[in-house]
Length: 391
Ligand SMILES: Cc1ncc(COP(=O)(O)O)c(C=O)c1O
Figure 1 (cartoon, rainbow, N blue to C red):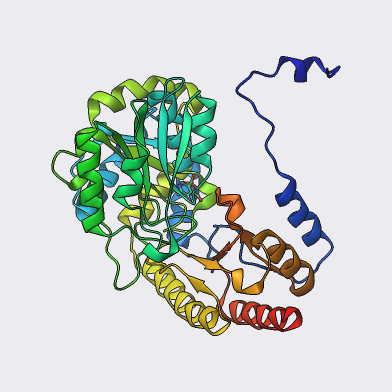
Figure 2 (cartoon, rainbow, N blue to C red):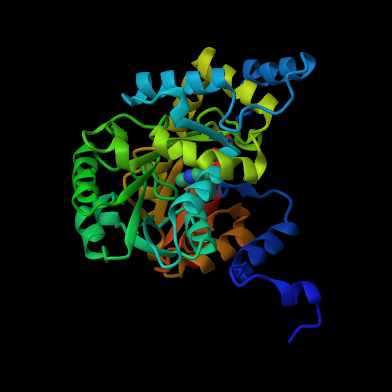
């Protein structure tokens, strides 16, 4: 028994996380001076200047007070317009809650939906914040595996197998982190049908929906008949507008539900940072050329990397969206955590293994192409050199 009164007092919901692998990676990187980081999901581009300028203007004009807990009305109106024109979604401004990133929406939603023992199905490999949020609320995260042979699309049969009387929510993340998989519209229709038949709530995380490459198509589940009333659509600014540190995201859901979440939302952080909300407003209402230019750059990097990885003898599921390639490195003969550690120490390229995304197959790594093209070429040359040394 520990002597620390604080540790003794820790609530049962707080569990010690196994951070040993991440810590080992960071320690290994600490002694190196030219690491090419293809690990984090944080764009290398800076926030477009007109967006940053809107936040500065808000500060200069003293627009830095609390907002409505659901967010600035003019931002919620712009979100409504954006969801309608981009994704054929029909929401009113009272159906939007602006949060500190999609991250806060996820926690708020689980607080709002999950009772102890409720099961939440989650597309996997996965963004493991979902697991933590469900567990903190006493629920049970249930991964629904996706496979390279299906390009990591979420398959209806895998969902149905895992439905029990305790299943309450399904989390669909498309495009997906870490796989880049875009679940095809025909499959989304089948998933919608499952949700209706089994009376499931759908959380549709569409944070990467602006980052779709030719040949793939995004369908917003809540635009399908019978789905709006059982879906919460999540989206935000971090990825498509290179605004990770600004912390603005949102949820959209029928008003009868969002109204019930305004009070807990107020309890969490009252409102999303006010100048950052003005920045988000400028992102939606201002010119979109910076977004187009970033998407073009990501597309070029992706095409180059897909070729290069195939040449190196690696396979992957087709990455139709986001900025990740979930790559099978079993041809290296090493489990992927060891592959990542050695690649870091011996070639100074930092990539995360699938184990950080709830994938214990030890076959995959997530490459995020969030470095300028010359650095990506250099990373490929280093991976090539590394593969030769282990051959
Ligand atoms: C699938 C997914 N959802 C939500 C988030 C959280 O994004 P943010 O809180 O920056 O909006 C991320 C971040 O990586 C993500 O990959």
